[in-house]
Image 1 (cartoon, rainbow, N blue to C red):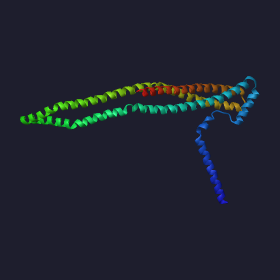
Image 2: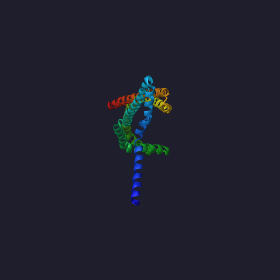
Image 3: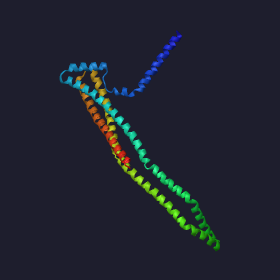
Length: 278
């Protein structure tokens, strides 16, 4: 018996844990319920509307229908905007990395040529520098004969040294020019992406407006439900009307947010096209 009771307790505990996990796994579904009368309250609402009759009854019915429709529209718009935003964020992340790596292999090859050229000429240039330093020392020691011998060596190397230095300068100039050209190309694409900044500013403005309006809608809803309980049809209709005004405004902002996400896509695609032609 004791084993059965323990088994029953464990099953109950497992069921409770599963229930908690389910609730935490679907926060959007819970939030998506939004502003909706419970079954009991809806019966009370319908009773109040029937008792009111006429225009007031029709208004209450149409208002509540619009309340439900607007919230469905909001959820659909939010989902569409989120999907588009995720795509835009990923595309922008990849694009910025591609811009950063533009001509990377070509520039690396030019840098390798510069380094190889310097390494190839280094022994000769170091020797030439050393000989000239010895000439200076010999002159300070008034060793004219030794200075003359060293000068002959230096003179014999001078033409080769000049050619070596010019070769290094040429390759460095090629690298510098290539870097400049790459920077110019990167700048051009980044200037295109700069158009995202004012779009982001507009988005923040709309999101702030939605946040503010959502708080007002919550307050309107708290005012609406007591009127239903009191069977005050006129006050309920007025509260619903105020609530719907704000929900329509939210719809406008959410529509603008989606349009701005779409505009973001256009800007990113324009920059991607520029990059593909470079």
